[in-house]
Image (tube, rainbow, N blue to C red; front, side):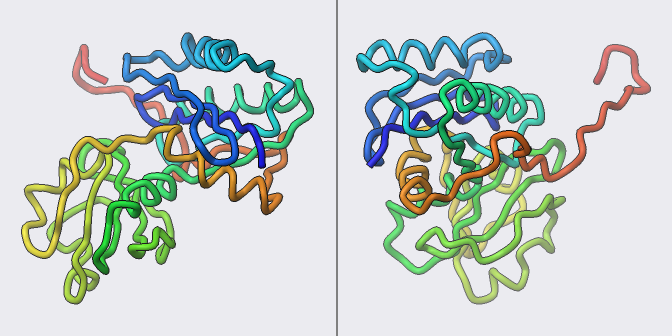
Length: 228
């Protein structure tokens, strides 16, 4: 039983929620562009005030570990670490893909494979496969999607694809695939997972934990003026 602050900044969505015993007390989130740095701590303070809580009332802080936006993850993890250091409370890391799969699994009654996808520019995605119980059955990988992707899996399984990277796959996969629209990372998906982690004492080292970027951050210069 715990009061946990959940922070999700792996995507363009800046999302923060408070949960007690795995049940959400309140949430603040926005998809306003580049809002993480300016609104994240504002959302935290607003949630605490609206629920008549002090920062020291928290039992833990949970943060999305990625994969996802390099800048967003860095801001979210830095904020979570700062809070944990300040109040001497444990830090929980939740996989972005695990949380997406967990949220969708609640509404899945058939035996299918779940495939959350995070957009990684062009035709690349970050993804992993899960069973219908949201248990991960493959490694998290960066994948350049083409007509040969998921060939073996689609022979004997229906795959449900969703997340920010799924839109680019609609023109490629037609058979044995279902697409779920408008599913983006949210701190609300983390409530039950962070409660389970807390009860199992599954914490990460506040000093040394780093986000799961999956790929090194690279800065490139376009050959065409005005493009990046």
